Amino acid sequence: MRAPQPNEEPSPGARVHQLAQSGPTVLRILLGGQLRRLREANRISREDAGEAIRASGSKISRLELGRVGFKERDVADLLTLYGVTDPVERDTLLSLARQANAPGWWHHYNDVLPPWFEVYIGLEEAAERLRVHETRFVPELLQTEEYAHAVLRLAHPEAPPAEIARRVSVRMRRQQILRRQDAPQLWALVDETALWRRPGGTEVLRAQLAALREAVQARHITLQVVPMQRGALAAATGPFSLLRFAEPALPDVVYVEQLTSALYLDKPADLAVYKKQLDRLSVQALPPTATSGILTGILEELG
Image (cartoon, rainbow, N blue to C red; front, side):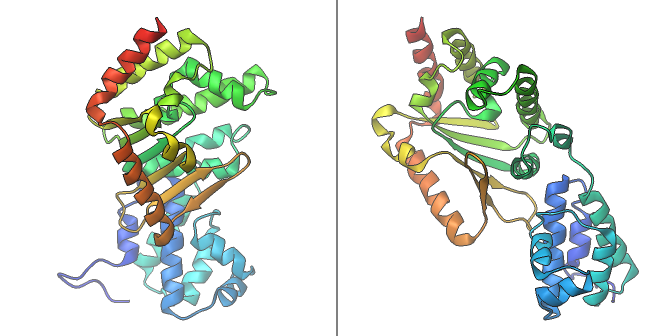
């Protein structure tokens, strides 16, 4: 394959190489997308690609979505099938496959984290913007340790203390993204009723609201409160998150958590519905400039 010419857009392989600092979840998605584009460009079916790596068409689908890890041998065989013979491009993509298989920090907690949530943590780590709608409690990325402990104890009433402590550790570790030099923009829409709930009692809530009032002073954190009298839409919608990435090759993702699984939506039609709902909710909510006063008012009523 020839080298790119001046003023020519770099090849997908070169573009992927520039993203090698991303986390393993994002790298899997990027590599899977590149393999899909190569397969489609050569008009090869998933079933035929599956046979080339001694697997099925459904395995190719999972690889292309970045839902499973990559074997370097499989990637090499697929590149050969797709006619990728340039040593530089092959080495770039094979190196990416190795990096995509490197475990993230959250893999150390796989005893308490279901696989479907590990995917979310990887996406959260790589997101440039996070839009969160929360109706139940204070958003997880803004919870204090004591408040998180109380919420997780409610969610897992039969779990032993050691397991709850590990779950709290995961939540606190996730919050480090907001303290990075390149911290993502967090915009949270929270139902006012969530700010009154006391999972750990009044003192825990008071400390949580005080911490929240301090957090919203940061330039990369925006919090809007949907007042109780306008909360019907918020209640009907339910909690979800919209993640946006700096990498052009990555689509936006909507994350909807369920009790035993989660939905990851990235189809344009689905994204349009959720984005429209966020816009409607932001109109229903009070402006961000009112948030500090709302939190102060609740704190005063708590005594």
